Image (cartoon, rainbow, N blue to C red; front, side, top):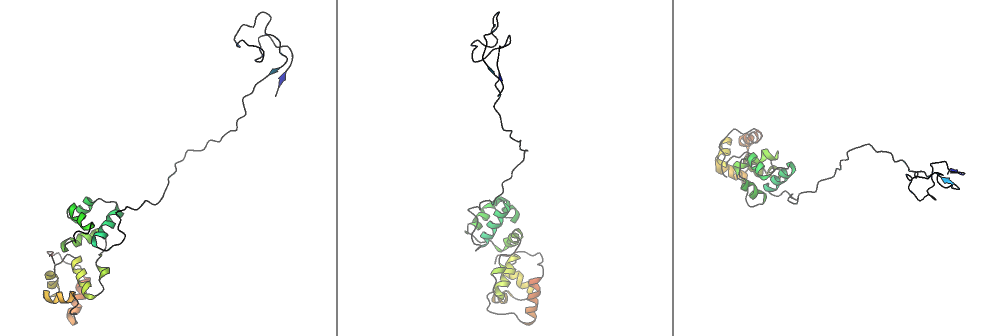
Length: 201
């Protein structure tokens, strides 16, 4: 630390001896002498580097909606899962399928099952037929395919060129189609359905 010794120059002052403010008049003889003069320095500061401005995006898994179904047991569970995955409201799903909001609400709550005429719209919304994985027998497969296309038993029987009672026995696994009927059935199950009037059964 630098120290100055000797007579203070005229106009200078020492903070340790001079009580008057620096701008006060020192008088004709100048300020009194000081045995030493100490020059004060600003305290040493450690330079802090400036960090560049940047944006931080925190990513994490969004908590699952409490309404998200744990198991897909009914068609309403499939509809609710698909709706929540897409972030849609019930009224938006209702508009896409062609039903009312109350209908969607009843399906998701398990208060009602979709009618056959609504199944094509539901399958189109889901992107898959939820009935087919549950079909373990030929009769259940026939029923799932028929309902998935929104066809009544009478209309589907007409496509197969059989009567409704025969189709009912096939769907309930009380009878098995054979020969030409079996071949026609397999072709009909794989073929796209023509536009027909949907039924209720």
